[in-house]
Image (tube, rainbow, N blue to C red; front, side):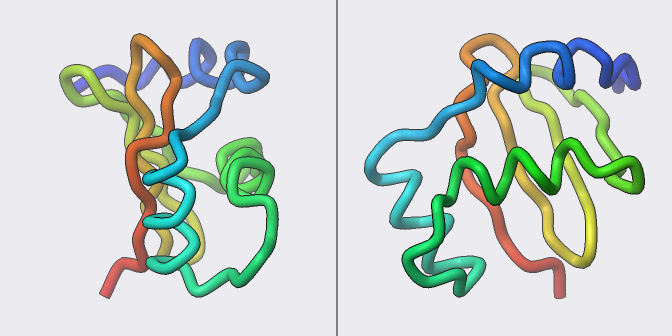
Length: 83
């Protein structure tokens, strides 16, 4: 487990998702037609967001939401509500 989350924050402009990821995140978070990528970037950039790297992924947790970002491509893989 790596806690050097500055790498993720420095690369925040590179964060993106795929078409399938966009739909999956939109449905999982119930955010309607919002810009999913900017929504996730804002959560990740929040000073209260807990960010850890485990293996090839970053896990970003804030407000009962967990966002998974690939550490190499900076692709948002998924986001879901923590139950």
